[in-house]
View 1 (tube, helix red, strand yellow):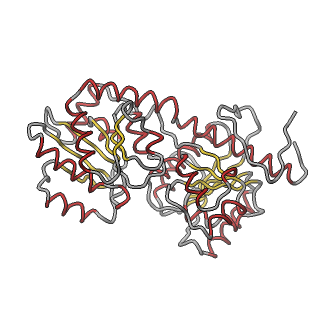
View 2 (cartoon, one colour):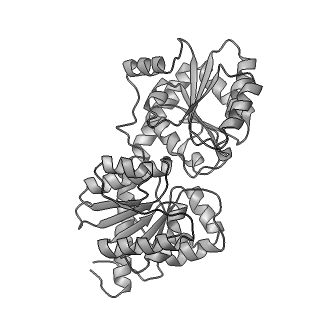
View 3 (cartoon, one colour):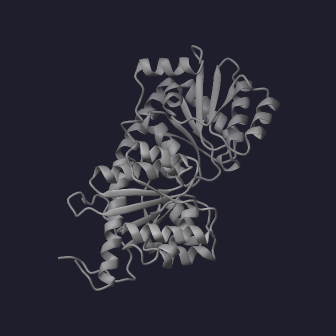
Length: 397
């Protein structure tokens, strides 16, 4: 017998709910960003997984964005929508036209600019959801209306993100934690041949110990503290051949370049710019670093763990949920180059510790953070929201 859910009740999603044999849903994801970062990796991975499971899964995104190109290549149907800012009324009207024409069961808004369009979509789909990825507190004026009233469900990618929503006045019962996922088949430990080729491609010499980092070159990612840590370690252990590769682009690249020059570690720290595929970098690495000052969860860390790398991560946001201290990596205080240097030193000095932590990291990523698990839990939430809205309207099925 189906359990009755009242309009004000919290939505409960069983962690292992099997929804594959239920009727297919029609789902649209909204992500208007031009770049392709961890969030877009999740959006595309979710959409592809839903489509593979037999659902009508489509995207509403900017045709000039990289998500559009990758989605089209993956065989996903896309609808064009440019959103200039949070008060783009014209975009809201265009969104309504798309939703009226396509008649989706679920519309899922994935980014901050997409969230602002949610009120325009009310009444044009059976259920509306938003995903919150950042762990800093959202606007206390807008957040309670958006997350408590304008949508039917809220996805937080970590407990830390859920807590930040609660502090901003969002009803915690409306928030479901669905951790980000990683393609465990695509991201895997390298074979010896793959590792050799990856290191040759990056010009890594025999015996060099490689630390990698992937993320936007923005202050919140804490790259300057990693650079300082490399410089410190080079002074205290000059016999160790350290090399650090930082992949990504952003507003502080020039600032980081000046810091590298100031610390005289240009031979040890390389800024690679944006890379479309981190496989080679991860396979060439011995340790992955994520020195963020804020982090919702850390998709890059998940990819590194799936590739069997130990992770040195800041004790912030979802990173403390992903990385098990002293088991899959080492947790360090944020903005602390001395602690980062110490952690790197421990791992550089002990191949056995690196191997042990790398194997545990791979196992944890596969067991808890697969793309399939993320898609299944999200689908379960979709069905719960659709069921709840049907019951609220007196059409229990």
